Length: 134
Image 1: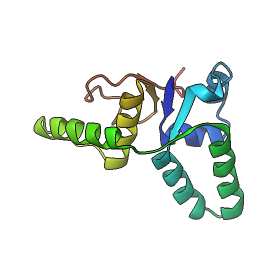
Image 2: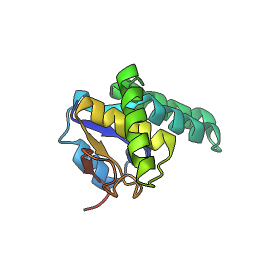
Image 3: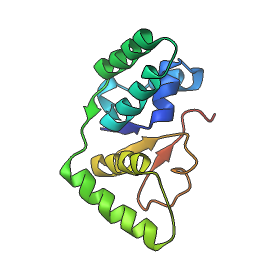
Image 4: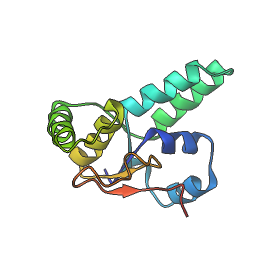
């Protein structure tokens, strides 16, 4: 696994945003993973949309195209460590963002995100790429 995609990049994938489409063209599907939590967030958005059936189908198509990564015991153990370390420094992160980041860390992968809260460098060892920025 080379990359773990955050929700905002997955949304850009679904929307066929040009910078992400271009970057995806150079990545084999098996090199890119989607946390099951990203799928959860995408399905939440799809269920709240005006075109529920179409948007759920788009999320399901994305699931079929790329590996979906479960939240495993090593990931949640890392989450506990990283959250405690961040809290001790007075840094707050949302739980889903932090578990997605820990998924990338656990897989030795780069997190692909456009989220400023994750791009701030606060999570030690986390490598970030933003495919929406040229």
